[in-house]
Length: 417
Picture 1 (cartoon, rainbow, N blue to C red):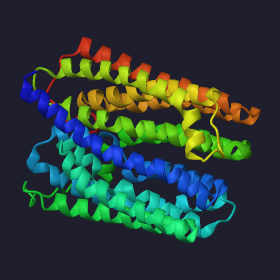
Picture 2 (picture 1 turned 135 degrees about the vertical axis):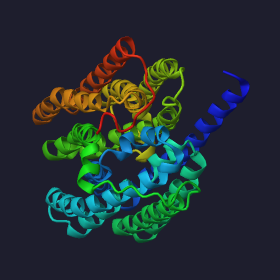
Picture 3 (picture 1 turned 30 degrees about the vertical axis):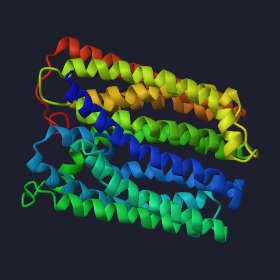
């Protein structure tokens, strides 16, 4: 690679990294502030709301958050704004349908905390209307930072200031919601005013459009199900240990967020239409596995120390829980790049759905069983086993695809049509 190419790669990767670092730092700072101001139990409820809303968000995003970046990178620039506008119309309809369902589920899980449940559902579904995947596919991290990350961070900071003075969780949720709403609105306006062919309209019927996303949404839906399930199982069967597992899960999630710049870079770098795509896929795969091992090691051995520090000594995650979550990160890192950068660019979106079904079939029964038996470490090991199965299957699919079939120019709609 030439020096100019290296500079381009470094610039794009560092651009995506800035957004992730800012969001991650805000989340980490929020943990001690929230546990101190609203209490350990209320913070645990907030994590539950975020987790359940994340599951609902999969239905709102409907696959665009997963495969949208690679799809944007693969289609002609003049058609990209129309592609986003049509997806936003579909996602807005889905938001109105999903919101009441998630609100009712949260009311049931929180035993009737109606106000917080409704507000939490409304707030934490909003990010799935955003354009972060679109800016990623464009390979324009500056847009991602200015129009998506900055409004969200401002809302989060104001929320933390508000909850510090009021000790009320709803104040935090209101300001976070305003930040998410600003990010969605500003991003949509920026995309609409893009210099590409803004007059072109995608007139695909809504039913047909959603049908093209069937493999992507089924993959992300099942993934979200077995990611959400451990938190729900611990909440239901091991309530006294829920704050500890919630903190372990939060640290694990922030590690996954830290992986995003790598995934975002590969989603826009791997799909380029030239003869070097197979080589880029192999480089991306090796890099993802290496990053997974390094990140997993850090999760395993730093989580006990970090949990005590961030909770001001009130919560400590044992190594018996952090170690399996570190192992799970290896599978997540591998699947994130192999699946959503390489296989999507090959039109193998169906493989994502199959991989998540494998993870669910393997992991879900074990998670429920171990929660009933009263073992949080065993629940964490069930998560690790399922994630390794997902990553291993996707590696096998990619290897088979590259060996048996020549790489053709990308047709983003080929697999979904």
